Image 1 (cartoon, helix red, strand yellow):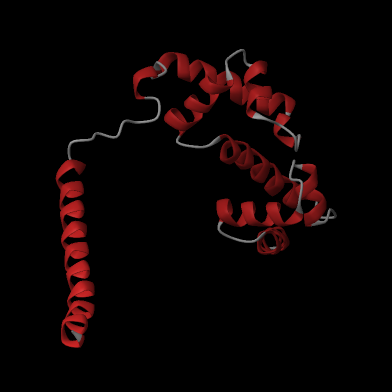
Image 2 (cartoon, rainbow, N blue to C red):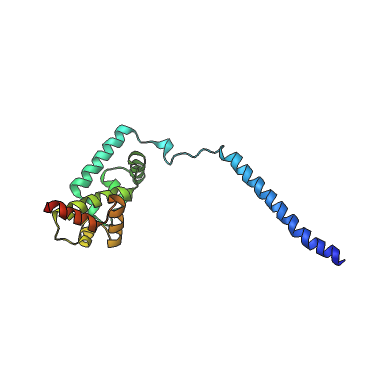
Length: 168
């Protein structure tokens, strides 16, 4: 009886492991076979905004941002901006993603960082932190992180380079 029990204790887990591996291999092979059957569609593929309309909206958007400097508002939301150019928030998001390849936050942050660069050069007496708040960032760390991401340098190094350029 002891030999039968020992044999069962060894063969039971081995059998279970064998069937587990077989089941796993079968499942993975089925996923590979069916993976080609499913087509992933673009987010807005069936509701593409026409190129002419998109160009008009982008032009209105850029004019609004340049004239009113709305990007300086740290609480600016996608829906707030979309209302000002008379389109839905969904359409604005689609337009930015499909036509410019950017998210709303990236688009707005580019305006903020470009303005910060101008201020660093034209108003060297301001601290970098003050400039960050002035252009619409809520936190110094967000300003520094975004600046480095978009300009591939820190605000301090950018300021030092700007000062060297003006002293030449």
